[in-house]
Image 1: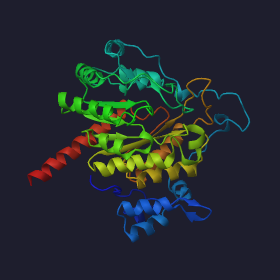
Image 2: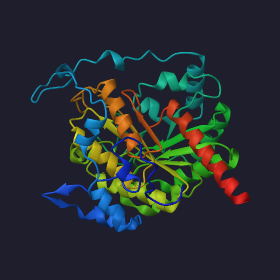
Image 3: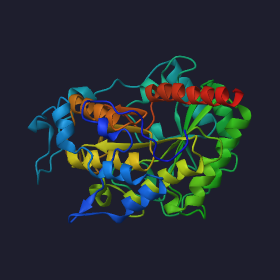
Image 4: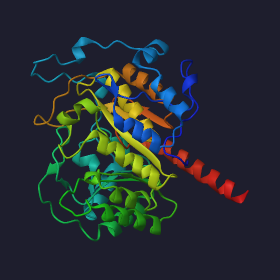
Length: 387
């Protein structure tokens, strides 16, 4: 798909006016933030489109047109309350086990590869690692298991100067993928602010090596922000990957509380926008955690901001405190409320919206859907070239 902010056909009885433009400009003290008008111009929006954005729907419109669920008070931590919330039944998962799970874990250890599944204590590890032959998968974490940043939600180890990246990692990663026989793989990495390019070349070399060994494999890269270096973003976006993912993590108003000070909301939006600009055929994707103290209006605005940056896929999932040292959960969002955000994402024109308590940035069910999207676009391009 060419263009940075294509809008897909609107769905829902209130969105007919938004088939060309979806987003409301954010306002501060009654004035639109200047970066939005700049972004709109860069995305090639006409004056008519910008007018439609300015008069687009707000949260009240979505509440009126969708089944808006009320949330029980016992799922929310009250102001000043220090006790952790009790885990609701829908967030309990089985202990990971099984032949495929054990085989995949042994393969990773033998090849000295790290996974975000383990380091971030993902609740879906049993489902993804324990799948049937050809479907079991893992999210490989490049450049080691130690990050140079310290976000309050993340359980990955941190250090100012982690060990240097393994120069054989691109080859080892490609070898592991070939052994698994999967057709979709997710690569991510820790932040490496200690490296001149943030590790962008290492990341891109891994993608190229994977594509060299197995051209048909689909590769998703969940990248850091490279401290805002757009050269690093472009190197990965043009390396041959199929999906470029970078997470804004939370709403704009909570960035200071949730993420390391070196990360910020606008910087993340710029990363996503530049990835699409560098390679228009690449699918772009981001993720938002819920339950950190955000309001519904802030969630809606974040989703609109992502659409304005050209993002086509969004995932929303429940934040779960990994250890007692990390940020506490403010609220457990009900499955019904996640269903509401799924409908909002569809109405906003995302190609793919995954919204459920246990949804994470990358997980097997989402990969199967994105495989169909990417394969379909590849077929369309071949058909157009033949005509």
